[in-house]
Image (tube, rainbow, N blue to C red; front, side, top):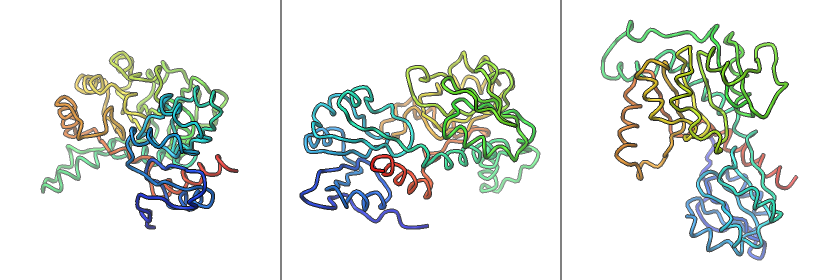
Length: 322
């Protein structure tokens, strides 16, 4: 794999040019491109207070989900012209206020949607075939075949909640498996094809053997997978989440698993993804999740492949300056 850690934190580009601040790790390609026009401050660990202090001199921002770009920061950034989001989801940016200020805001879901789709499929196959769990047993010199008999994906019904870039990418990867896809998207229609059917949320809950979340975090989607949601699932589905941790209430998921309402889960995101800040309850929850045979947890890496790392940088730059 190519080396993507070519730059250390610091300043690059023209000293007398407008300042562009990169607030998270990014591919060197983006630093090189921006350095041709800006004084690039590459600060992948800068805290909110540090960014707030720099705000008056900033002309452009590159962000991920690490920092909230709120009205207080935008008020201080009186020279800010653009914000580029690496990846999808703009919930941490005050979009209404940015628009009022005339600040251009772009995201790059096209850059990592394939990576997310592949990861979701990988987690699903791993859960259905108990790959991670049985590997752990083999590593401990246990050879347990009957206990780890898998379930085929072929012929199943997969529900996709949110049919944007990542949801539709996941669907594309599912096509060779001979599944029926039921896709629910509150804001889209007319996307059905020979194996994807548009469906209501209730139809997804009633008929799907797998339910995968691909939605942004909004007030409407926050904890949409709660006790009531799981109680309406009729096929004991496998639950996948590669969107945002707070889309799923983990306590509700735990209850549903223990009550036999769901068959398992593949989670790439959690409500809190900073272990150093975990409460005792959050530590206990993670311990419980990682000790279940049909649950897999990965550290928010679905959209973080080597290829996506570059493509997100390219898409963001092209949208900002094409």
